Image (tube, rainbow, N blue to C red; front, top):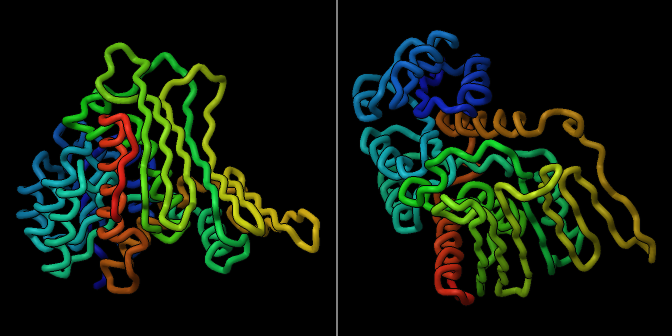
Length: 338
């Protein structure tokens, strides 16, 4: 194919600032349509980026346009029906996280995708960060020894502006800060560890916002069958002066810390900094990760690559998410088989 014809569903801030500009710069991609329930907003954005067609309904879009792929970047409750609509028309999709509201929905998407042999990806762009890729390579090469403890967190500082209201509505979001921030870090850690089998999950939730219906702070403890302990802490609005985001991996022979990347090893009885110099250390890795994620999806459509974030991984993560929400509801550890 000369150019891959794609459409964007969802004209939110990240689509406007990151996704659409990236797609418009790709020589082998044509962004032919933009779809959003707010058609007037979508029309303004389409005019700004010279996108030919605007729709307010994905099913009509899929029937009208001959597409090679579609990006589903909408509120969470729409991911599942929109993914099924794309599959019904035989169109590969990159679905923003979470792939669905729960594991049963995710499994239905995966089942239909496998039956129809249509590639579906999940939007987990932390996997595409250069520092995360370097760390994964170190772990796969056993440079740090067997991991035994991983701690990760994303704590956002307090600000005057609350989050979008739909994020607090579990019927739309599927959950609170865990579904928003925590899922990304859980996916990153479990991907780094090679999708380990999980033994137990224990979750502790709190809601600081009086009007909130979903958790806005959370602590999660995960134990794998090979005795790796993982802790996760996330929050939307803590009384802090700045945001904190980190992922630290501790192994028998060394350790690794992200943001920024640092690697340490025990070498001949000495602690040595073995952090490699990488080209992207001083660039915007956030946008660069989006570029690599979108590039991977386009190459998957063209048959030149396999998904880095396949739909099966989306099912795996949603099984973990279901278990940790169950643990919070029941107030006790939950045993799962992933």
